[in-house]
Image (cartoon, rainbow, N blue to C red; front, top):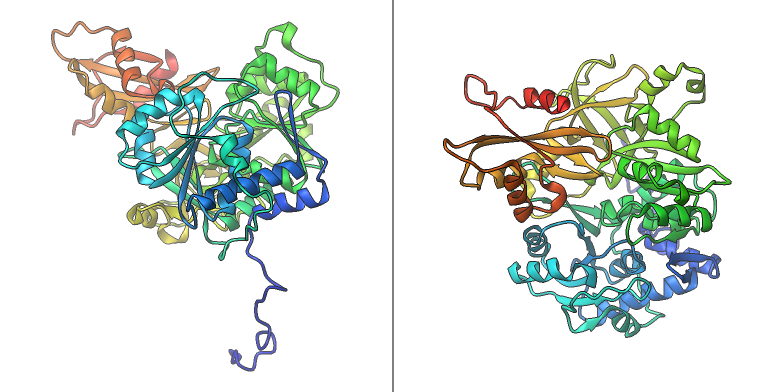
Length: 546
């Protein structure tokens, strides 16, 4: 029997009001940290120290200054910044103005940057002078004409050209430090826009909402077992899924952000030791960089540092070396569409008693859902029926819950396809083990993950096909000890061609971001099916043997 709402005692007269309801938003975390811990150091950048009182004031100034420019709800503010304080300020100040933060990958080429600026309908661009050459080229290609604000880093000065008429620091100081920002009207409002590489066509714009950012930020703290006042080293790019939401997580526990403009082994070891770093995140390349540092640059640590990594699980030898160096490594898994990490290889204490080879098998698995994720499973991608939890039957890894994106910006067809059947389809193939842990086995979209960055094999192939001497091309992932994977190109040349491997790689570098260009190139006749389809599985096996 359904009770009439008009007489239901649990609804009648019990409405939402300002006393009992507020939209969920991570903006509230910084306001609380500034209220409770105003003198705690929030940001370290070179010799610069910023406490929470000042961090909050500067974020409000940014929000105010943007508002005075006419920026408001659903306007896009793009940033081309490394891991520097303005990037942290943007994570709060931009949404304080009601706008949407669009963080761009600093390694992208001008054409992709221009596409993103246009697709996002960028109104304001905050850009570091280090990236002036590529940003200038992108602006010349873009249809939009955003207001450009240049950031000049006083701690690590850059001599790049000024592209706009406004300087970041002067612009920020024009804002009101007491700016009366408000929470979003609806926690479903957009807070951030991130672009993910697709296998065909242009990248897709992934839209995050305030509610998801709030919940994932809290889940990070729980997953990372962060006590109050942790010290977090920014080895993970903040442009990547909004730094996996850690720019918001740290305010929850009044932690310290230790900025890192460039990933350099000596600098990392110095900061870890001297700033008392307790946590850091990154792709396997960060582990390699730390472990392969010159002996004189390494430091003996007086505590165990928590290291969270994604992409391919590191080899047992690397895990052992990290432990010896003072790091406890935890494996995470996620995608841009789920705010970064949403799966964790939660380690069970009883597994410590297993033989090392069995421990390695456990560590190779991606794991179980974050506390903020309602559903994680492996389903048949066509029928959406669960695969047997036998650790062998392949299916597609799927997600559902509050930390799944709103959808793809201006792309209803792709959004509908991604959410078919009430699940987010990851495109990753995996198995489900009897204990409920998920393990990836292949990537159905042929995405290559190199140093934590996604590279579309088809994007690289399209560039190769533009070369006059290329008859056919296929690009696959080649295992790499340093980067995890690198692009490996197999190329059939046209008859009579004398182009060299170096020539083709250089050609790719002219048309792609450097990290996307093939590191290995093989001239051969491509294996094909009877219908002419290139057999990439055979090429992957060849790449492994190279």
